[in-house]
Length: 263
Length: 234
View (spheres, rainbow over the protein chains, first blue to last red):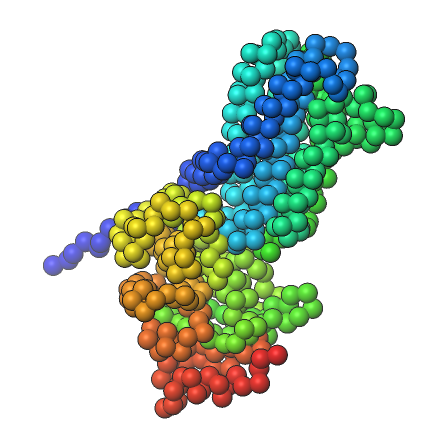
């Protein structure tokens, strides 16, 4: 009498050897987890939504500082969109990643099926979703204040947001991966305040001579001027895009070279 | 094929030789405890086995695979509990464990795992607000959520009260029915309670390895440990 061999148990089947979930499922799971973590975090919401919304109302309803030629609410909205990008892609991610590194979270998730690549992709996804939420909320506030953007500016505006987010996220990873968590907290907040005045809210051509020249080649000036060119004039701001791409490449290479996964 | 194999491992970090020509193995179905003073090279060795650090020379194999830059499916077969926990403090145990479970094709039964580790009471409390022992149990659950074939547990009972320690030891022994479990610890009691095999490291080298009885050599593990590692703390 012969007996049939037991059916082979494949990886990932109940009773079979453990296996990872599908890559798309892992990345979506991490994106969902990171997005919820950001949206549940009061301090991050303050920097991502409340402060930009306050800045929008104040800039739109007053006449200082000088924002240059054009409808003031349009200029203010473009600048505040740039601020939202910096808040989420740079300040929020630098601080969160710095403390995750301190607490060993990056090492733990790097050892799960998610891995380091999935962790970074999850961050990208979360930043993208939070940015969409921010721009919708701030856009609604701006609309109530009278913002009517040229339709021709929406596509170049979106490109500017994506390039700005890439540049600032790569710089956030450089900061978060190279210095202590407390220093990340201090420097990321300091940078947020300084960048406000270096082209984010105020156009670079309204800054004094030397500061204007510096701000134009900083990611802050390129992002702010790019948003204003797209959303106020409906232009395709190729110069600022080149500056943002250059920062994204430099930041990406620096992060790949110097990012340390443990504190 | 052993679950874990370390052959002539050397790891240099910034000019310091953290591990020097270490060789040992851990079989499936056994608990292997790694003992040694602080700075002996235990954590560095384990991090090489977890794929978190590359080796400088020699080789490490986990389930026959080089863990450095190994695939997601390999990482799914390996559970990791880090010394510092590695837990995101702004979330809750339930959210974290559900998220980790979603990274595996067939995860462990979360309800059963959290009940075994008595985490139900704190499942929805922020990890930041948990006690050290509660965090330890969350970290252990995180290591076991993928039903690993090899588990690396760094001081799994540090900070736990006696009842929780007994429960964790039961769970570790249970896990070792099918898996190779490697436990790093400073506790002789823990090693004597759960170990099949013992590895003692000092100054980056393996100074003893074998079954618990072989390493004890008729004496107590504590006496053997101090005899083998005396003067190794710098």
